[in-house]
Length: 321
Image (cartoon, rainbow, N blue to C red; front, side, top):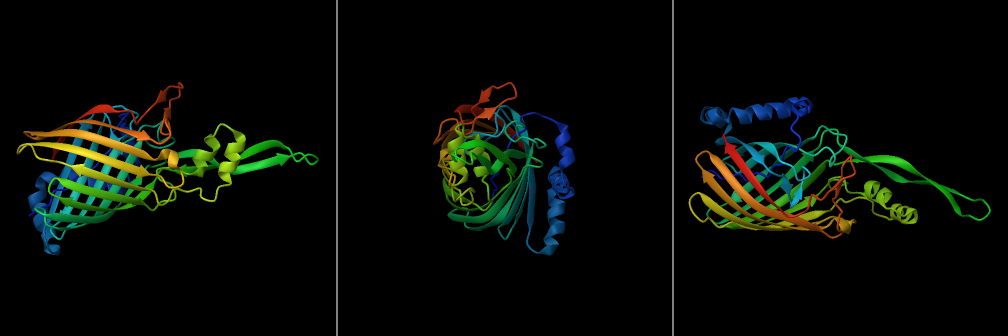
């Protein structure tokens, strides 16, 4: 039996075809594979020569907001997303995800996120099903400016601080995680662990210079741990099927950001999914709460503040091919 592959994609908040220029040949080829998935039967037969059988597919979605773990990646704006996926009969799977992100939220980049994930599923779709894998999120060109400490100038006589000059530094948002999941019927639990030095850019390089008080900022840089490697996320999901084409999903998650607990979040989602002809429709109420209010706020060039964690109703329409 072919296992279904669940995908988690982000959304284009400011449609701009220029992001296509930054795709590597490998990513571009993967998109072409997804776009030609309608010829999947013949292709699967060719691939079967290498042992087992392959299933290829893809999906295009439009949505009113792109949410991951309850937090918007598009500053609460609408957009679209694209996914390509491959599954081997052995249980090996791979997915590629291309999505736009808000350019104020992920500055200096191409407004693009490319996410690759893959791994291995084993067990029974009708009983206990397990999965192990890894995923990498790449934000081409995107980085956030900060510092790696201060050059302090003190008075030779009194020792009082006269001036402090920030030593410039930057950090990327690129993040690599490993994950494990357990599924049984409508119940599932999934766990992610961060291997990257900075969990989506969160580190002392960004946090310390942003503190309004200079002494607090200096003390922040003097902490032993400046990274967020070892951050983890756990998600519980209950997805009962109401009919052959209708599913209700209840989801709770908790994100722990190591060494920077202000960014810890709790998130939820209540979602109704309906398959109608060739379309997959979803309506979800979702949001998140950070330990420190405003920790994920986005500042616009006109000084407007956007809260990407606020609870909102999200509508999504997708077409699988």
